[in-house]
Length: 137
Image (cartoon, rainbow, N blue to C red; front, side, top):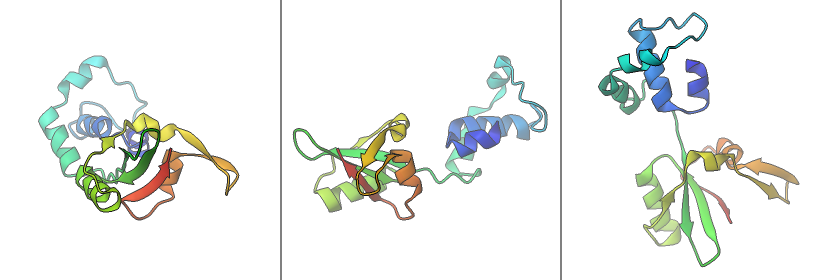
């Protein structure tokens, strides 16, 4: 379950699971049988430190949007709000941006040049440099 939380980029969930395993509350080798009461045993301060110090090695990128006119939005990826703000200011001349919910990364679009649908998550995973333009919708 911990590996799935890491793979699907769920840092809070992964940090809580790591805490439970590291403190012997659950056994990481056994089949996943976490009880509801086990979540109450997580020290949120320590779990938060795991996230802050990125001990699980997340390289999370987020989706941001800037409205460029009445009907169009410019979508781009960045690692954090500071990077997003710099991109918006340098490329689009604004500091007004919206951090989109991560569920939006599953949205797919048709790309005529490659004749295929791609999700925003696919686009993001193909990228090595950030911040990066995604598309205009």
